[in-house]
Image 1 (cartoon, rainbow, N blue to C red):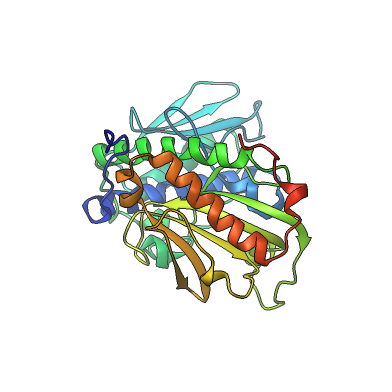
Image 2 (tube, rainbow, N blue to C red):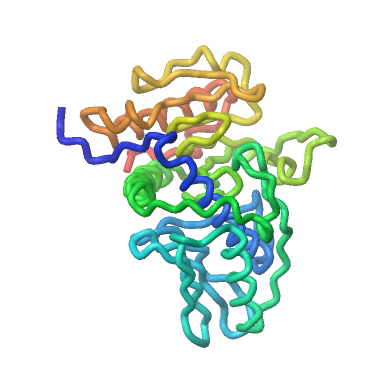
Length: 305
């Protein structure tokens, strides 16, 4: 076996730090949602991987726009306006309440109006129901596991970018969602779907068209282990019977949906981790695309990149 290039990410060893960081990203994510015009499938709210961490990218506002960057090398949230000085908020030693207050104070100082709801998004996955402005409980931040997580995230991002490049059809960016803290990329068949009238607005927008999504999450209260996942929506009949690669990948029903799963620990120990992840992405996509009768000849490159 070749030298392992990806670090260990045992969820239990950093779950408190991960929860604090997750809540930090929700605060910044809601700022992004407040400033950026709505884009299809909620793509306007996501973050992007950089060489140093996660960025909101450019957000239009007074003063020539603004960027917010989680720097996982220096362990600061940097707020960079188009005009004026960059502000930095330390991640270590800062509670969620302090982060919320400092972010809003910085925006106010810059004359940028933002409107964010104070309630935690998806408490079941975050593990907290305390409003951000009142949360002095979550302040654990250990830089070492964050750096390990980011090292893994950066490498995984490069694999998902390669997978995205193999597709000619409509496809999302490779981006990080702050509601569930997962890095994902989504392919579309081009066909509209029928969403239940009872579905919430998030679901209606996310699944207005047929999708095949693949992503990575570092673990949460509902699945306490780092893993890769993939699903097709709407789910075609028999999806769970389709073959997956590599051998350690499997199908599991979660919240009524069959998902392909591949543990991060198995991935990092593979002789060729990146190749194994590409195989997982391709096989799980192929399973749904074949059963769903996607027009694959129109959507896929004749020669893989």
